[in-house]
Image (cartoon, rainbow, N blue to C red; front, side):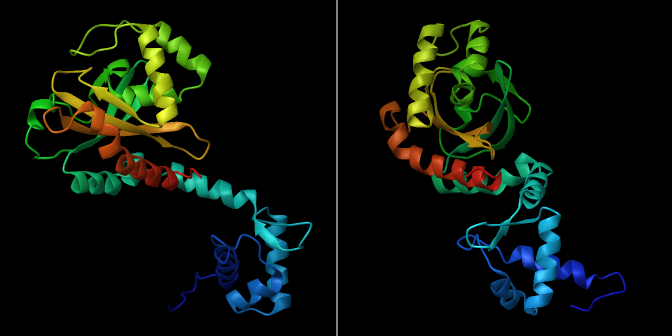
Length: 260
């Protein structure tokens, strides 16, 4: 492109050096970097030394090569955090709904409730009956939803216990878990499986399966689920039929949030 009067060649070169570090090439020497960005070794060394002093690169003591430093990681997380979760997840949710043909939801945990932050509705037969007039911003009790169970299961033990003590259990569907003991056992199963299944615990005819969306530090930022009418799939087949594709989508969104 044609550079205007405000263009900084030095900044361009510095960013080119940082961009040379890619997956599979975490460590690069000055000579390698020079070849990648088309600069002499002495010029490259000057830029690398400056970036290292600023914390954007750090030198490996054993090999004397360089890797990306903590300042770059901070910039990456700042960029991620400045993006709306819905914006990051939206194409993945649409793809999941298109692939399966079912309604896909995303929610966050707010104390004892879940709050819907995105929905991709499906016209699949039976979906209208389980739609429950939900919308972005709608709230439901966490204990009787697949989204809520997977988010409760992801909480640190002490925080989870504190919340479970405050739940006012009430029967919402034919299979609602109505005791703390039953819910605790269910959350343990969820932690082992990596996903939660709701078998008509919220409403008659509604089955769903949910998986967590994780941030760079392993905390659950949200959860996503597939909602299916009970006439379409048995509760015993939910995990085998939808678990892999749901967890793959959750993993893809988590990777966009920095989770590794």
